[in-house]
Amino acid sequence: MTRLDHDCAWATAKAVLDMVGHLLREEEQKEFFSMTVAAVEACLIKRDELMARERQRLAKPSNN
Image (cartoon, rainbow, N blue to C red):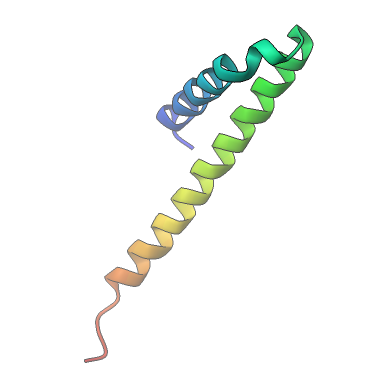
């Protein structure tokens, strides 16, 4: 995971928390923020795995 991915995960978590934070107590907001960062980071890691697999698939020569 790159620094850019990390920064994007934090920015996304902040945006989501801004949408629903008023529904949570302060301690719940901190926990929710951490959970959201972890979920976005997992998504970005999965994206990187899928992109690497796709690059590998496309780099193989055709059987035709």
